Length: 149
Image (cartoon, rainbow, N blue to C red; front, side, top):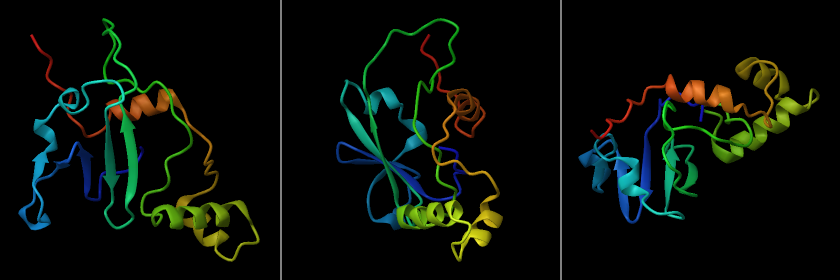
């Protein structure tokens, strides 16, 4: 996504929650680092919800579209496509993002200068670069999965 993993998050699938277990949450949360994705999403059309930043409540539906044979010398997982840029971190959820887009696209908007100073020039909400996504994905914080022998 391009976010910094600086907020709480969870995955929800088939009535189960995956994330960082915390008894104060009041719900059983399975440790996401101990569950492999292919155990949660097993068949095409299986789905889960990824929620990031419980205050902003970004929710993303993740759907297993198809299972393809493993190709040698390919580093998995692989981003094969996408649409649009990741909203900036801490933009305020969907409503804050809508306000942000309105402000940065209109130099006459009362919040334009403040938003451009906060995020910087040149934010393109339609931009998506598969190569950049894969570089970021593989350079991120998540550990590589163990491979079966």
